[in-house]
Length: 287
Image (cartoon, rainbow, N blue to C red; front, side):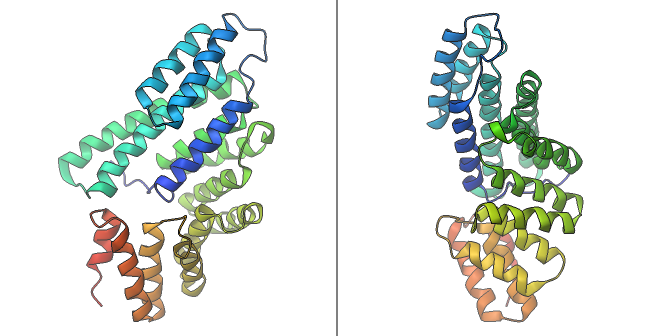
């Protein structure tokens, strides 16, 4: 399987995506068109699905989302919620592979196959939501996130651009733009990536995701001081808790020849998730 980029900032991004999506569900319009079914019962089941999703009870959330769809097959919000269930299952599998224990070989391959399957199901549900309501910006944004995780940056750029073109049902334009910047980064277009990420930071100064990713752009361009500055900003924010930022801060400090600062970044990296793949990379550096 191709090497897949790590989800932006791990669980912090999962929570941001989930929070934005749940807010979108609360303000959505599942029965705006003339429905064929039972909109009231569908909305009741959708509310239950949203509640279970917020508590990370994924099986119950999926069950209620399925009921919401059965009562009203045009309930775009229900498809979006069910897509989030699959997305969070994929991220749970990723955590098993990369964070809880850095797995390799057949064990990792089997889990990555599961992760791919969950992401495919998530993508199908987000696609259906967007087909039902082409102005559903959050569904388009979620499609873009899935495309980025599947290393399909052109598709990610297309979906995320569409999301930003439909802001009425897009909860967090800044985060969506940060995802668009990451899609450009994955494509190798560092100029466009930096442009989108800077704009995201104008929406939300200090945003963990955009700051880390802008650091990755500078790092790829070998602008070590600028890269280190971004990674340091992330590492200094307790709310971010980014092991990836600590890893790349260590690398940038080494490129700058700042051994003591690199050692401090390595220690911070190891303290976050000692058994992760990022920790293994931090530990491998001898200085």
